[in-house]
Length: 467
Ligand SMILES: Nc1ncnc2c1ncn2[C@@H]1O[C@H](COP(=O)(O)OP(=O)(O)OP(=O)(O)O)[C@@H](O)[C@H]1O
Ligand SMILES: [Mg+2]
Image 1 (cartoon, rainbow, N blue to C red):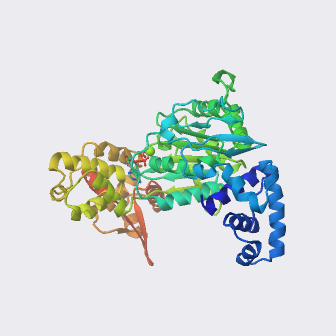
Image 2: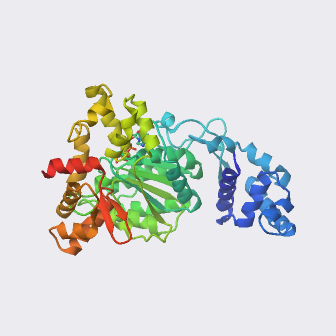
Image 3: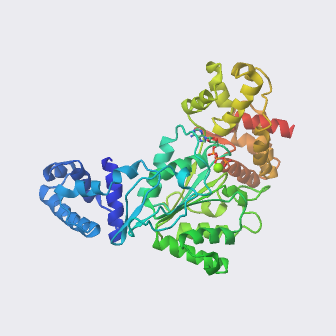
């Protein structure tokens, strides 16, 4: 366990007790004590005086004594923390919660999320009534598969959710880019910060009413029959739960409740009330976090401005070349010198690469050079329906705009694109912005102009369908 982990743990203990975060000097004291530094050393490093640091530390130890219900001093601080076995959680899969006073102390790593998916979410252990089984409901979460790269994305999400207490985080990007995989791999890093963790997929387009019921059955541990009968009441009960408990909710496949044929982010008819849920979670103060995985952001949450920390967006791009190469290596492809071309063609999208690697193995015995020698590129039957789903979601003007981009080898300038769209400038601006929000086009900002381009695989697909 390192100093940063102990800091996060200590910060949460103090927050649970006082509702306040550790300030800079308190953090310096915790970090210094964990590193077995003297007060004068801590003072020197934090530009304070030993006397001041002693005062800060003395109040802090009193606070920890109350929280942990034992006498804490600088000399026993480390061993007290170690007794809670938190070192195990830091790399954790699942954890147990031990009630100490009114706080939950995480005590034990159990196993990978997958292994306890089907275990009942909330029950009391028979070994000790103060111990509870993990309050996790991951039955909707898919299996974890291989995971490369994404260190900086994981660090960013961890910072937003744990340190900044962001209430709503949207992970956005094209199909197969790795949103679900990223969220799955984030869980072990952050789940010990929460009392409840629940994963739901909106893949079957459930109504808000059904989604709220499903969340509340777990969060309130009530049978369905005892839950309120109206969506509004369920919504306010959920907000109450998010206030009184620190919950992490992951909603996957959110694009399924968003409509096709319009600019990005509009709801399908009958699903508009999800906007109220997202808005309330972003606007109201509470202790919880909602992660949305989607091809595009619902329009409501786009109204939260970038300078506010309550709602944040992570647009996920392709993997690094090294990580993408690791995927090709796993598939035992040949002609390594051609891999960068293949990776670039598929925009480093892990799913597109995996599907294509299968095709290359089946049809070309793994020879990437032979696959690439065909023009135009052969897009497999597995990939075509996925690309089609993206294309079908676009508005008419968006389709016109990408047809223009796909006809050009070089990136197209903003002015040129507006001129070529058969629509008013305002409609064209909206369409271009929407395409960018969907992750379909990439923006290149130069000094004089903005240019747009697309991953070659999308260009190739548009050429096929738009003739
Ligand atoms: N970082 C990664 N390293 C290796 N493989 C990855 C990585 N990210 C994703 N993959 C693989 O790519 C495939 C697609 O990933 P994932 O399901 O997470 O994409 P997604 O963005 O959630 O797609 P969709 O929007 O269709 O749900 C999976 O097989 C997954 O294992
Ligand atoms: Mg997914």
